Image 1: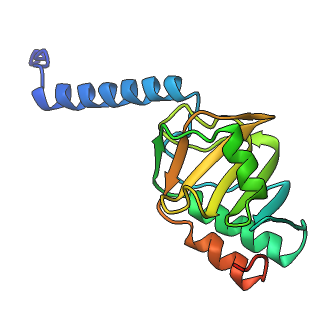
Image 2: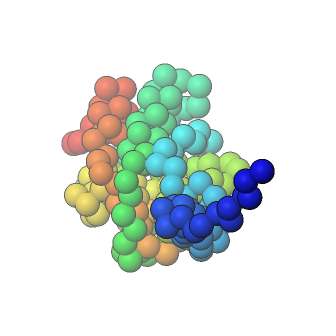
Length: 179
């Protein structure tokens, strides 16, 4: 009866196991840093509790259950899905008040209950209960998204690829027209 040979180390097998362990370690570190196990998930699919459009000095509430609400909420979800870049630009209390009252700016504010988070590789915006998205005026050109928790502005901002779907949904539903 032939004797069994001890297995010799396989370099390819060792490299594969090492790569898997390194990838798992990187995933675990990012998950612990962000506090979000789905940090890699690009989709945003939340339903706002309330939508208010600060339309050039006039507040317009988009009523829940109406087609316009669904269209705007879906457009926001579309804009927030995909790649997002975090930036140090933070909305001040003065800017927030100006967004609410300015006759030269259009801003959409989405309120969530319960609080939600935006999946990303950054720790920021987990959790938040209000999104503030400038659509015309200061910070609108850079597709900026600000967050709030309670009465406090969150640090930094996200920049999304495009806010065009939100503008289109608002225009199609006649929510806000530039004077």
